[in-house]
Image 1 (cartoon, one colour):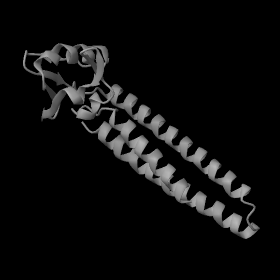
Image 2 (tube, one colour; image 1 turned 135 degrees about the vertical axis):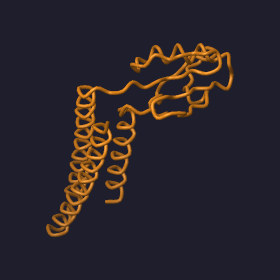
Image 3 (cartoon, rainbow, N blue to C red; image 1 turned 90 degrees about the vertical axis):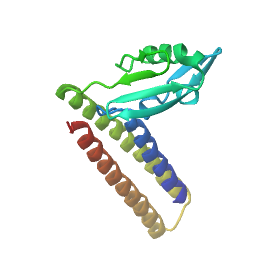
Image 4 (cartoon, rainbow, N blue to C red; image 1 turned 45 degrees about the horizontal axis):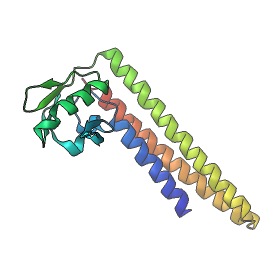
Length: 176
């Protein structure tokens, strides 16, 4: 049971980290997660090469620790297809997040809904694995039934969490 709950918590954590990458018209340093710049021949995360700050609600400022990495970071941002053109002033790179249109907001809500559905599928797979383990144990019938009911209650609890997370993300995305 503990192992099953840990797996479900990890599924929720994965969902939350994936939803961070769906932007809501606001600047967020998490937008740059997974973007690597080639620095001295090695792919290095942008977060390791620069200080990333949010001076305004819709802009990110990236100040490299080494000014020699400025061009490498700018190239990585251009190649990442963020939909944002980086502005390099020789000292820092500024990313200005454009205001989202209504259609784009709806598209992001659909993407968030699909991501939540993938998390539900992960929960069902975890439930199936746990149910199979319980059935292999050859427990007495009433204990087996209780264990299966507990697993289902866990799934229901985590499905409610997914619903809450989706509602929060939807509200964030639709807020103008």
